[in-house]
Length: 72
Image 1: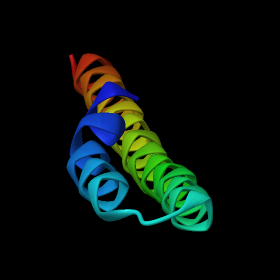
Image 2: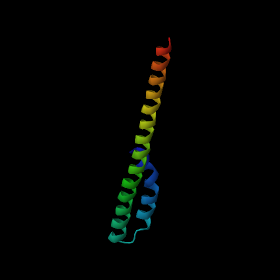
Image 3: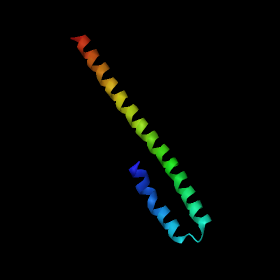
């Protein structure tokens, strides 16, 4: 989560600096929250895919090892 917040904070901070009224602040905050959700989902999907790839490689290794043991 830190990676997401760290990446998006500068944009939010800049929008807050140029905000002229409460509506601008609320719009910047809503945009910031939307960006957090969007990027978190993307990063979560990457983590999930990475984990599944890891499991797949482990299973391939175990099955190939099991196959080699049957040949012995």
